[in-house]
Image (tube, rainbow, N blue to C red; front, side, top):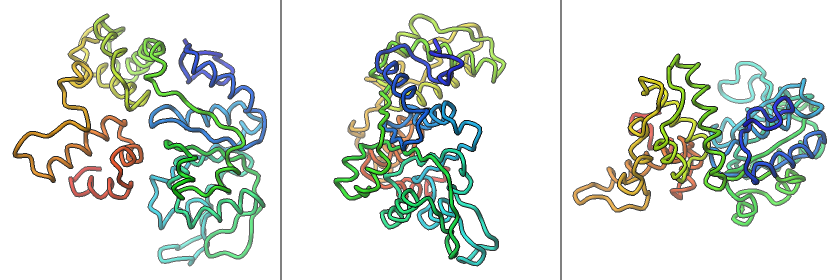
Amino acid sequence: MQLEKGAGFASFIGISKPMREVYELISSISASDAAVFITGESGTGKELAARIIHDRSSRSKGPFIAINAAAIPENLLESEVFGHEKGAFTGATGARQGCFELANHGTLFLDEIAEMPVALQPKLLRVLEDRIVRRVGGSQGFQVDVRVLAASNQDPRKAVEIKKLREDLFYRLNVFTVTLPPLRERKEDVPLLVRAFIQEFCKKHNSQAESCRGETLKLLSAYSWPGNVRELRNILERAVILAKGAWIEPSHLPAYVQNPGASGMDSNAPHSAGTTAAEAEKELILRTLQETGNNKAGAARRLGLDVKTIRNKLKAYGMR
């Protein structure tokens, strides 16, 4: 079931109580121009929630610009957010608009805000307060009219406590809070999501698959989904591609979904004797990335590493 189709919720699927509460809150706050902080685990749909808020607002005809602070190298992030003038730094061969200018008269979604360098956060706060953007290397300010939505995979209050997120910035962004539930807390929505994803990927891949076997659906409903809806979506696309007939069989699912206890997908499981430290580290990183739907920021937090370390490790493994 797609609740309130035609009213901005067509992409959010679910009938569970936690999701109904999310729909109700978004319905209440979308029309305002207030800042919203969206929280939830990796893969729960934070950017989707931000897009729905934008689509239901008076700014819906304006641009929706999304930027992930964890996905952009620290030395480039300031330019991405605020823009730069020609000659501002090596390689700045021309002037460039930043996200605030691009989002003018629309909505700016700042994902993984807690990953933004602390030194950059006061500049962001200043723009939020006076609505004037100054490009890197520039002296002239630009007035902007932007609604800001922010998001984080981690508890923002904890990020404030450990000094990763400035307290004044958090309170400026946290007029309203939308908390998206993990999939394991709304298991009754799994069959609805499965049906929707099968339909989507059958069209995309010209597949004949129509539905899941009962045993397949039981396995999908029993799995804990550490990567949430993103992980379910990826697994269903894989299954649709593998399916040769009308049914998705248990064998079309990854081994760790078919038999979680025997698959070794537990990040804390011991490694076999003879495994080198480097091999064990690589295996753990790749497993954790798989569990988080290939979300580097989510994997980094789960492993107690920073995102740059994950990127460097993947580069060393010859992987993107």
